[in-house]
Image (cartoon, rainbow, N blue to C red; front, side):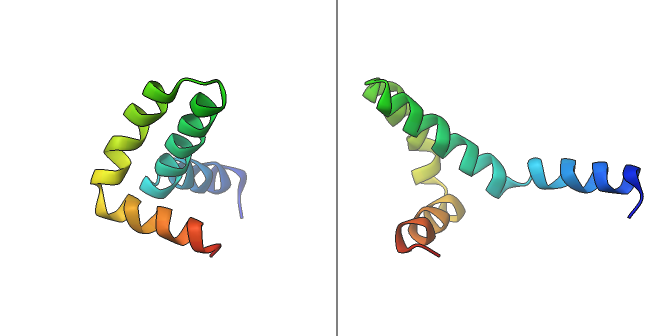
Length: 64
């Protein structure tokens, strides 16, 4: 794979909805660890309202 193609593929993966959802989960977890529960809840609310994100959360809970 050419370097330009690899860069394009990496960008596509990083901007995929699933990657963005995982990033939001990581940020919410970090906020909760800091004791910022209001911040964590505000970050999680959009994810919980999104059926695709809710399915991803369920998969993570089940360890898949």
